[in-house]
Image (cartoon, rainbow, N blue to C red; front, top):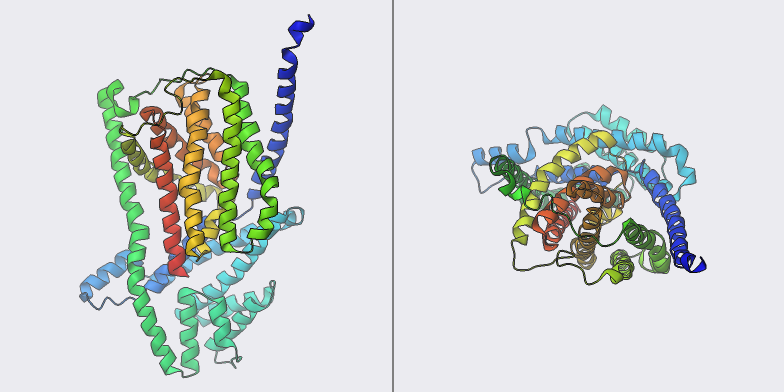
Amino acid sequence: MDSELAPQFPRTIRRLLLIVITLIVSGIMGSALIASWNEPQVASRLELYQTDLLLQATAWEGAELSEDQVATLRRNILGETPLADAQKAYESVRETAVSTLSSSAADAATSTRLQTALEGQAELLDLLDLRLGILAAEQGDLTKAQERWETVKSRHSRGDRLWRTADTLTDLWRNGTLPDNSETLLTKTLQGWFQKRALAQYYERTQASEQLTQLEASEAAAAAGLIFTLAAVGGVPTLGALSGMLLLIGLGIQRLVKGKDALLAQNRDRGWATPWTAETIWLVIVGGFLFMGQLVVPLVVSPLRGLLAPNIRGQAIFALSYYVLMSAGTTAVLWFSIRAYRPLSADWFKVKLRSNWWLWGAGGYLVALPLMLTVSVLNQQIWQGQGGSNPLLQTVLEAQDPIALAIFFTTASVAAPLFEEFLFRGFLLPSLTRYLPVGGAIIVSSLIFAIAHLSLSEVLPLTVLGVVLGVVYTRSRNLLAPMLLHSAWNSITMLGLFLLGSSAN
């Protein structure tokens, strides 16, 4: 009797440990997801960066082109009423910021992370009102401009720079007495088009004609390059989405016509011979990936955060180090969990260079574009600018250090695709086919993949992206295909951030 019970004892202990780890991880992840509920999305900032570029590009005159060509390009890229359109965009983001502050203020005292986010939103609200005032003033509505600047002055947010800027702007457009440091204050507080409009007003007031001429010349020179940046940022994704839509329609028609011989039906119901049980899956995902990533690795690298965080390069090195350590820890847990089942069949973790994997990866990227754009619009309606975002996006958007940007790019476009596809598509998805049909395994693994990013607003779009990645992997049977898709998605997203950030700043 004792000999029968003995083998079960270690297994029972292991299961109890897994239950404890699951409870700990659930608490950490649950609190992170709840905290993201009222956090702002980076999408709002992205919209404003693109709006700022559009405003700066209004100085473009297209001297080398005919009047008709200039008019056509301005209309297609900048729109009929760029200032009014920009004002609407800023009003929309302002409404979201006000909503976030009012709905989250009561919870800020219990969450340091949320309090930090709300302080950022309060500062954003002041910056929005400063800019909305300049937009109103440039359109001749000085009363509205004055209201915006008075609102900033009445809030008296942390520090005095923002409300002193509002005071200076009021004096500029109302011919008041300007303080001696007006030019310095405007330069430090404002950016892009708003900075140039305020400085132009200042130079006109102070009759600094030489500085005004230089400012106008620099605006015109910068605007020519921004026209092409806007065309790239807006046009390339649109062309890609149209190509993806056509490809998606073509694949759908082929599926209807050819049935089981169509590309989308390839390996559709073919699962994997999974030798391990749900306990092993549980151990790798919860005990390995989530426990290591959410508790062990943060504790190990926490001393580095204080040393590296003040510097943008340090933040980039910290992000990469964290990701590499998390990947190594999870991979070690996975290796020890499945070592008893080796050698595995050839289908597991399959990487084959000589195949059509690149077509699956590139095609999957094109198909993902229209799907993700559609889901993003729906997601914005659901969350109204809240629900959190990957903090790395905002950091990259504002970073100006080429070395730091290169490290961030390596993290997002190389490290993340390699590890996440190895884990979620290489291990989790095939393992789930022991208990679920292939389609069900794709959906469940995609949902876990999305939740693991710990932002409520990203769950829906990342689930959709995960489904596309899962379809690409199950049809191609080659991990290189989803790795390429994932890398392309992250790379082009990062490049867009680089373009927007560098041009706006």
